[in-house]
Image 1 (tube, one colour):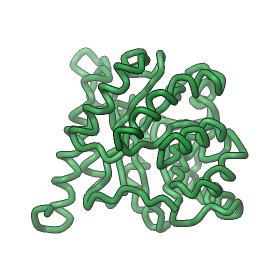
Image 2 (tube, rainbow, N blue to C red; image 1 turned 30 degrees about the horizontal axis):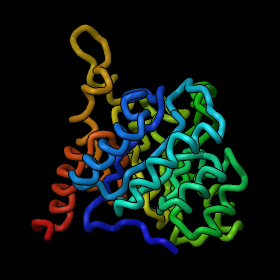
Image 3 (cartoon, helix red, strand yellow; image 1 turned 90 degrees about the vertical axis):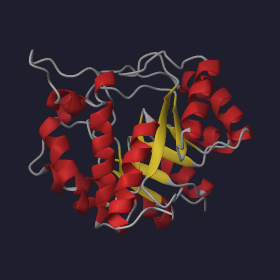
Length: 280
């Protein structure tokens, strides 16, 4: 089984969207050359994984077919693997995940938690790579209509446990499972803050927890200016780093971010705070 990165602090996963329509950087890294340059920049700044995705999962995004997804990410993954860069693949499709792992990706980051493709569990079990199971209730175009909960922390926890049970039944090693509460996916701002406040409920399950808050809408709304307009995505970096520090202090395994430098500093400070001494 492939092991998760464990850098001695909360891990930092750098987002690489090889897409034309992601919510904050769509189109910026669609070309292979631009994508590789950005990936190497994040790696040089200390990212522990580069999370390579070829399909946008922003609210309202349209789906692309598997061939398009593969054609976007495979040249990038092959090149990064040849350069020794550690990667995860951000996909909900088993065939894409398998191709990526065979080309050098070492983690599957599945925002659907296996619900979008019933073959994903088989791929995770057979390849033995860590599998991030995110809380999910539907594809991007439908998710906003599904943000209804009796108790968002309890409900998300129960639904994630259901995904864990199915993964284990399919032969996935328990040590390969990572949980993600899915901030912003079928959640409103109140739900997102409740989930962050309730991270202990997920950590208590005994699995590594990944937190993905980078540049998300709930941060923009919190940082609304005097005119009442939410802060734009590129104005949410300080808030993202703050969430990274809070998640790391709570004991999260990792954070997924666009700007890795600030979050690496943030989680390093959090690690020193948790230990009560400088990180060695």
